[in-house]
Image 1: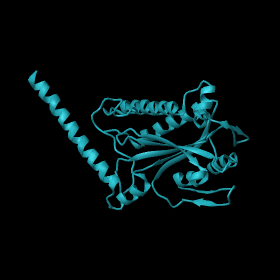
Image 2 (image 1 turned 120 degrees about the horizontal axis):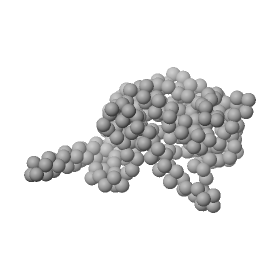
Image 3 (image 1 turned 90 degrees about the vertical axis):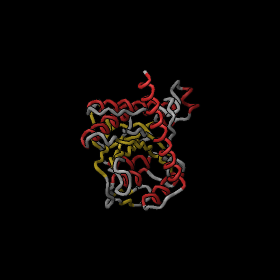
Image 4 (image 1 turned 60 degrees about the vertical axis):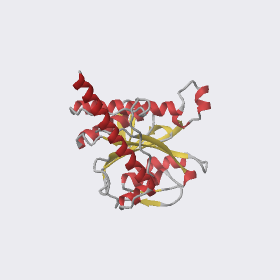
Length: 268
């Protein structure tokens, strides 16, 4: 079945992260950070299906230089706790072909670029060889400031509404940050379901929580990078055990609910 996942988090200096390093890692390339003098080289990293950095100008996608983009993002921020980028991670339906997954990511990222007037840098990753072979996913980096193109170079302006405090958003009569994220989740679900329908796949995804959908099944928890690495190495973790128990319980719940439906139909 198709799985819904869209999460977002900022790339923050206070966490020891940079936009340049994040972009280099996700796109499996080399980027020199002009601000710090560090070179981030992940060119030997495997598993990247495709990547692209772009802006949308007058409705047209325009490619931009990845290194120039994220160096500009780093130089635009002066604070030591600045947010230099925002990452969105999405799960891509394994039921879709490679080409349709690519088209879906292109449509969604162009939508985000135009909605917030930002530069986008996405990388589609194939499933980890030691993990779930259905785990096709994409990492989307977006600038925290709106962008303009001048002589082919990106220039950053004011902070996007996603980066403003809820107090500031209220004075501007704009949706709260969480409300904006819910809207992005809904847009992703709608686009994905359109593609699943086009591909004649019955499965659908829903951006709402299980509770909001009034489902009996329970969500799993996030493993985190440490537990994920241990699980991939064949070492069971408490979080992994918890998720396995949840999946087993959910399977039992679904089977019981299906039996109830069958019994009701038999009684009729």
